[in-house]
Length: 101
Image (cartoon, helix red, strand yellow):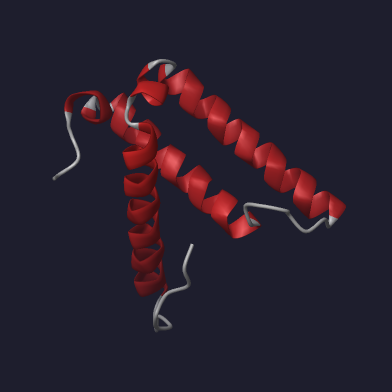
């Protein structure tokens, strides 16, 4: 992900910036994948994707290896994005709503 264009001055401003990055990631992935991959496996599938990402971070942090592709920060963003999708799924919003055109 791209670093913010300016440094936040407060923790809540930093939180807002990260959430904007999550939205950007969600929209990019949604454009590439659509809903099918989430709808096919539901909340359990979302939990499994989060679990895979957590295992990846654990391995990288313990081993000290530099990732070849996705950075640790990008993996955190993926986890957070999947968590938001999980909340929307549990509220039936992911299933019923569409992305604004």
